[in-house]
Structures are given as C-alpha cells and as structure tokens.
Length: 121
Image (cartoon, rainbow, N blue to C red; front, side, top):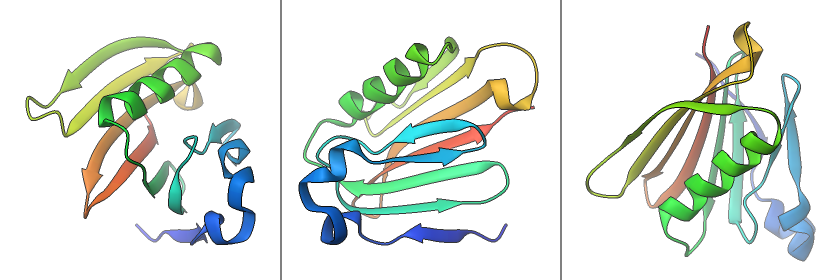
C-alpha cells in the first residue's frame, strides 16, 4: 500500500489558521483537529491518516471526530476501546456503499496522535 504524503507541517505554513484546515478525501471533508501541531497527512485509495501533536486526552480527539461525522449524517454502529485509554475505534455508517461506511481509529503511534479513517465495504 503506497501512501502519498500530502502535507508535512501545516503549522509552519499556516500558523493559527491550522484549526480551520480540512482535507477532502473521497467526498468527505476531514477537518484537522483544532490546535494540532506538526501535522502530517497520508492517504491511499481507501485510507486517510492524520498524525499530529496535541496535549488533549486521546478520548477528546476521538469524540471530536465521532461528533464531526455524526454531523455529516453518520451514525455509530459499533465501538471498541483499549483499556489503557490509548486506542478508540468506531464503525460509522450513513447508508449502503463503501463511501458511506467508515472505520475511525484514533490512537497514539510513535508519540503522535493518529487518526485513521478507512472505508469499509
């Protein structure tokens, strides 16, 4: 699975405008987490990955994205949480078809917050 890096550091380029940044991904407008620093975005045909530094609890990051997708018409169909508090997953759906079913995975990887969005078929 080859990934193309779309951005290495939004912070260096946009400063305080970072909280308003979003990336289009297969018809989804995915926002950058407010206050995120050292942002890196990678995508491939069915997966979007956002890495960033932020001093919030990981659960807040997860809740932010779940609530964002609920606002886009998705409903949560299942959730899974790691007991350590270092990983949260949700499957979300807004109908049939691969672009209407996503898996959201929020975790810490290499000291960075990682938000992964993958289309489920």
